[in-house]
Image (cartoon, rainbow, N blue to C red; front, side, top):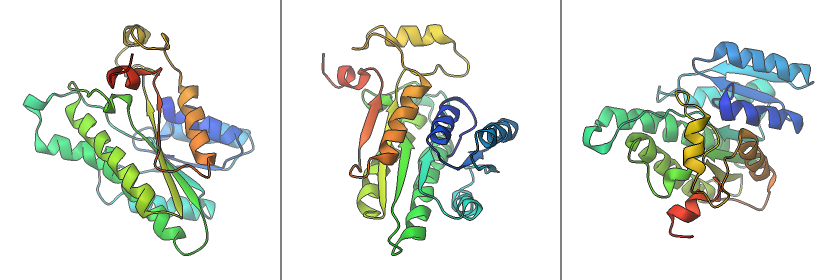
Length: 240
């Protein structure tokens, strides 16, 4: 699980552990939080290991996968949660900013999935990948242009990977909506976002974790995106 020590990642890690999974938790700068979470998981009777890698480095994802595979003696699934979310609009967008978002938010998840496929190809083993997207793929996110473009690329890579890496891998995605505020905002920010949602309420990290666990276990589902957003994508897509 990339970016698994905090926020949505932490909730999903705990849900996986409660379901009986042993875990490798990737971190970049949150090593202490990742190791503390591993201690918590070990207290639950699970095997858990924290591995550090800077996914801004284009060559970091492949060795991270290999180290995780060797640490657990094989993997059943990969959850790509790590991402960056910098503000910035198209009038000020610079190529290096776009490339950095693509490296972390799209390229690293793709490489991790491809390494998984390369490892299991021809062995008869089956696996699952879940990528974390964003509800704002529908309707756009002008205030975070580079982030939005990178997540749109990841959505396309999810579809193409589901085709290219089958039958060995099922590749799906979860697109969260108003579940957690950005780190510099509070819950009032979420209340503003949820005012016009069809479900008229916010979501919670557990909702995203539940959708992720469903996709990991749904053995006849691939190439799908589950929007965990209270119906926002319906409204933004033209529905009532």
